[in-house]
Length: 260
Ligand SMILES: [Zn+2]
Image 1 (cartoon, rainbow, N blue to C red):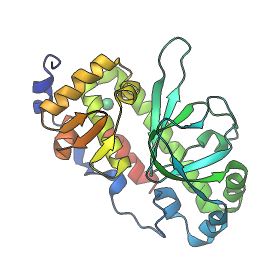
Image 2: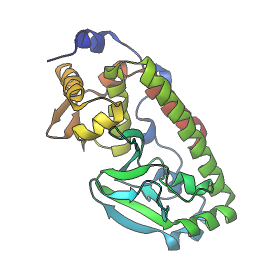
Image 3: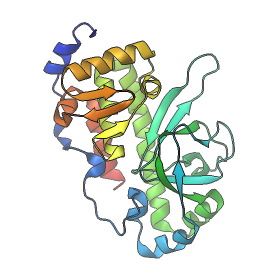
Image 4: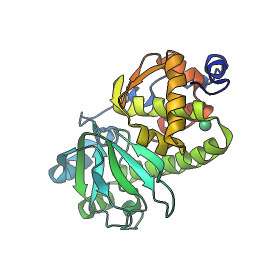
């Protein structure tokens, strides 16, 4: 079953703008290869201050990284793991407020002086992450102007991303939003095959799982992805870019301009 007009939509909509492909994967000057793009951008003098406190950890699917309104004890820098920031609703299912992969970090509120997590942060894609105790990280920010600058600019990016998503949710079709999220996860995962449960896709899109089934079926029917048993395989990246709403190119371009 395909949403009415979905095939035509997938074939006809051509968006994505002139920003190019795989923004998170674009080669940017790096000073090392930790696997996290923000850490890789730090100058050696500041990274050497942080390095002794960095701990590499393995995160499992659905592992709680930060509980809702619990103390943010560590700042996480995903490497191969992907974190999902969930907004908790009293009477409804959680809604995903954002995902964080190797392009960013988790624990932003603590950097703004708020010790308690405004989201439930869980691991959406199992993998590795680096982490540092929050107290040590804040001290490193005080001592390191480039680290502080990167954190501020990443925060500016997340604010822009959040406002773009609000506009996206009221302006763009569920199919084009699904393509946007697929592209985002593709970038963050750094590989063509990645796990993505219907549950998470429903959180991302703010729709019921039945709608997720229909939308994923439309993307599959258009030859853009395979989606079986909670695993996505991207078959046609360029096609996804064409069907995605403008928000993908807009926010990724912004990240590239101001963060890295
Ligand atoms: Zn959009």
